[in-house]
Image (cartoon, rainbow, N blue to C red; front, side, top):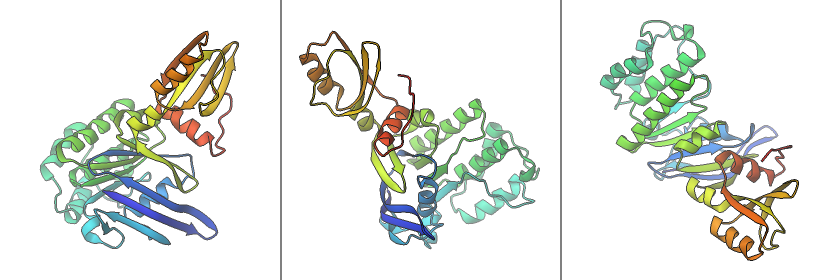
Length: 293
């Protein structure tokens, strides 16, 4: 389990993390989302032991990560900006990673050439952005990490390769119990793979829970008639006589209260992760204008 407890990090006068607390359960896929500048990448650099917090704790299975080689060797990390040595080939980086990670799987590395189809002896600097991202996955998965942390992992990949990479990640979770943390703006893809989601804003954790609980706690109501007063409304819009509400509560709770008011028409609908993200952030002045529902 990865944990951050009351972590604060400042850069000069700027507070990048503000008393941030988050928990990534072991063996799950955790999606970390938030607007640009929310502090997601800064949080990830703390979880990988790159940054030292001003205050707070960052641990894996209860043991600190910062300046702890025994913990870091259990973590695989693919940043948004890929690192490689200037003249290195994929085979050169294989040797480098194999020297760092005791569990590096040489046989898997060879087999993955059939998946990524990358030239083994060409300098990585000559690869396209998408090919460099594939090379990063090729290396990281073969390290057999217990925890895999990914910052915008499929950015720059074509749709087929995006699906291939996500399939590899989920296979690794299923077969080896790998814990995966993914930070991404592609909420549609996260919705397909994540067990837990954390929504960050301004360096704080706004909401953190399982995706099933998150989707079960907020719903869309479309109705013709008057809304009962005892429902918590996150957003409201109208089109003619049809009113659309985003409401807190389970589908059954909302249906029971609305049905008791005998409206002309009503329907309770589930929300996507993208809609939850928009309306949760709407509560902290992250306004989205002219949303068509």
